[in-house]
Image (cartoon, rainbow, N blue to C red; front, side, top):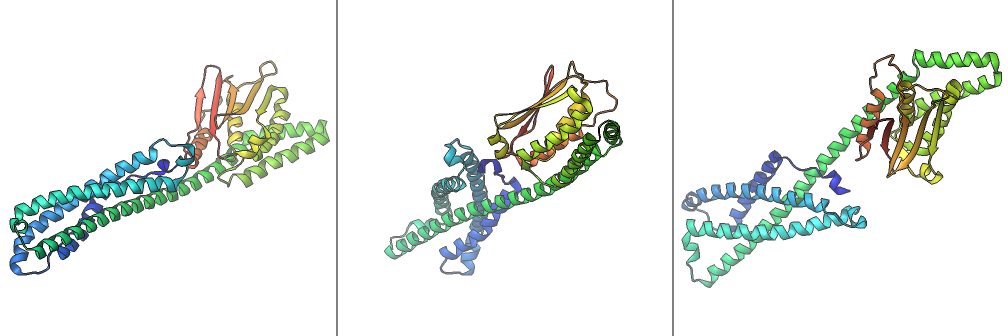
Length: 366
């Protein structure tokens, strides 16, 4: 939704834009209103022009603050699901409101300036000449049109500044996401290509080679698939949920070969669901790795990890069966997942540490 990408201007930016427009607006207004210049006219009018410049700067700054306040609440106003996703309708609605506000602001400014001129130059309002009255009326119309155009120009310029800020933020997020992907790639490789991981798998493999040659060949094949997936998929921002689920089947083969019935992975997902959604690569692998790392397991009390979808979240649960810590947990894996999703979607990763259950809810990407 557009409301989610609304980047307000800072007060410094509003002051710069307001007085920038005043510096452009006031000379044009003076040019329209003064048909004959002389030293006495310039000397007499100069203080009024300075006041007009200051008042105009304050006026445009106030306008920018007010129109931005209106824009912020217009784009956040609850509408139907069809309107809320249509940026064009949101922008048109804001534009119509801006035009109406420009007319109201113009009337207020005209009344205020009429009062100022009546104090500074009373003779303007004591003429009976039809020609002079017609000229005054034409000047007022020109001033009204100029003020309204300046207000709308300020509105569009402020919008362009916000768009530029949004593009800058997108660029910053892209750079941060690239760095997070590099970190994820490195951490995944570091976690997997660790002496402990290699020792465990090679121990299993050495046993299989002696007892079951065919099974050892399958184990080597699955182990190579795991490394290939880590190398290939960790470079992507997101992948299909089906791809990650298929990888988990290979990864679980290694764990099941090692732990047998002490660990189980239960996936409660339909074919339609795994083909519809996307997730960040290695999300499930890191969560399962954490569960295995921190929990003890046995045939009597197996570590059962379940995966399902609830309210557009991929929910991963495992019982809390903490083992005696052999090393200090850094939390790198879970924090990396949280940071990467923060840059991709507007929903946070939810972590719930219940009494006997550890739950992580991953926002699905559609």
